[in-house]
Length: 302
Image 1 (cartoon, rainbow, N blue to C red):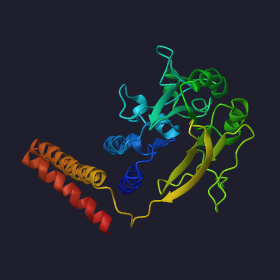
Image 2: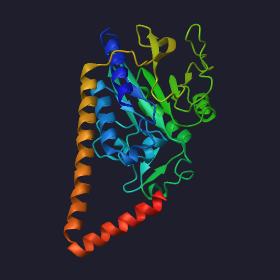
Image 3: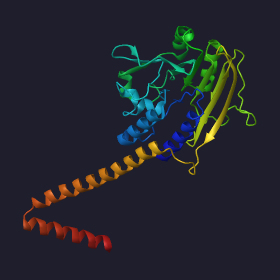
Image 4: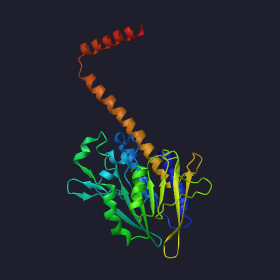
C-alpha cells in the first residue's frame, strides 16, 4: 500500500502541474481487508489521500466494515459521499452528495451502495447502526435537486453493473458512472480509450481492481457552456520504478519508523512483564520452573 501511495501522488502532482482542472476521487474499497488490525496504517492512508487533494470518496464494502474508516468518523479528512446510507440514530444521511467546483466547472458527485450489503455480510452489529435505502429511488429524488447546481454529474457505484446500467437508463441527467466492481473487460477500446455512450448520452465505466497498481484517468472535453463533448479514459500504471512524490514518501518513512519503534516498545513491555512474573517466584519455585523447562526440552529433542 505505502509504496503505491507515493507513486500515485507523483502522478497526481504531474497532472496538477498542467494547470488543467483536476478532480481526484476514490471509487471505494480504499481500506485494506486487514485494516481492522492496523489503525496506524489506515490513518496513514487517509492522511496521505487528504494531502494528495482527494475531493471525495465513496465507501466500498471494505471501507464500510473497517472500524477505522473515515465513514465511522464524525469529522473525516476526506468527504465521504454515501447517498443512500442512513444513520439509524437520527435518520440522517451520511452525506448524500457533494458539489465541487474545479476551475469553472461545477461537478456533482453522488454515490450508492447495494441495498443488500448489510444483509449479506457477517458484520451484523452494523444492522443497528445504518440503513441502506434503494439506490434507484434515492437517486430519482436526489438528481433533480442537484441538476441545476452542476454542469457534470458523476455517480460512484458499488452496485453491480446491471443495477448501475438500469439507473443510467432511468435517470438521464447522470453524465458519468464509475463502478468499483472488478470486471474482466472494462469495456474500453484499447486503441483509442473511448467508452461507448448509452443512448441517453451518459457513459458507464467499470474500472478493473488491481490492488493500486494502476490509476484510472477519465478526461472530459467540454464546450464553452460546459457541456460534455468527449469522454476518454486511460489506465495509468504505477510501476515500482516510478519516482515517488517526496512529501508522501516522507510520511511513509515516518510511519515505518514509528511502526518499528512501536514493535520494539511492545517487545520490551513483553519482556518487562515476564521479568515481573519471575521476580515473584521464590528461589525454589524458580529452580523448579527451570527443571520443568529442561525436561520439556529433552523430550522435544528425543
